[in-house]
Length: 213
Image (tube, rainbow, N blue to C red; front, side, top):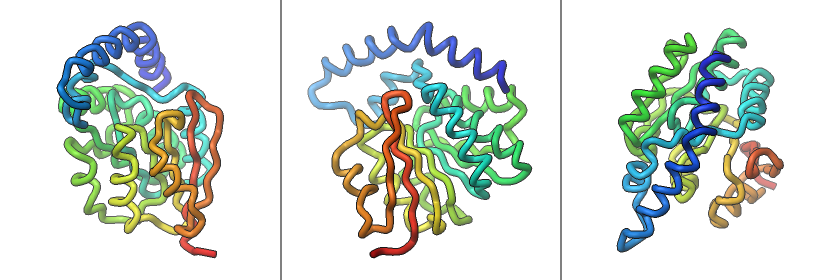
């Protein structure tokens, strides 16, 4: 697992800046802001991993919370999925369901999970998370949101009916998140308690209490 993470982080450090510069340049030529599918295609070669400190937090939270059913939105090459699944393995229980829009990244994520010896703990779904995560069989008690930022709220709204009381949500890239999403997860009237943390370019850690004041 450590060897896979070391390789993925080194590759991201070496390649992601140039890939994203090309993606932004191509997006600027489009007649309208790219759709999630268009943006996914432009960034198909970018690993876009969570910050290493965020990854360590994910591992720690999973070990502490011992979730039975963790969900991730935005697999990319599987860096965070490896860290979540490693914690589930070390707990001795639980599964991760993760999703990715780009088919090429789905294949890479599955390969990386297999190389890390964690494939049996993870279901990787290909397609739009607003559809693929709609019919989860078990209550969800841990969520990582790390895909396209404008989809955080629609994806969360798909998952909310399945969330267990006490479910924890980690939202990555705080500085990029839409105000509408932040208002939603910071609203105690919806049963949420939320805290921002200075890891990477910021994360939000939220729990759903299942109650309202």
